[in-house]
Amino acid sequence: LSTMVRYLDLQSFIVRARVLKLYRQALRTARRAPTHARGQSEIEKNRYCDDKQKIRFLISEGLQRLKGLDEMLDMMGNS
Image (cartoon, rainbow, N blue to C red; front, side):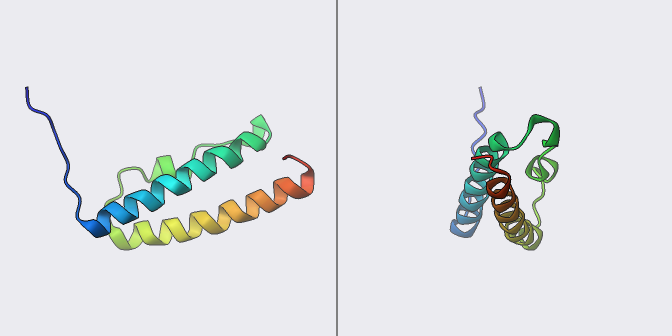
């Protein structure tokens, strides 16, 4: 049996950790949103992206959008 092990350089490891942190935050926030308002995750759509510059952009955009959604849910009283 061949076990596939993917080795990451330090920079890739750090970026991967940031993506996973954003994903966990998005899941927590999505639980607060009404069921009908939940859609496919942008993270899932870009799961196989390997362009480092695009990934950094998506992380930044994701954090901004998540912050806006979190604030909106707070205003609507969904805590």
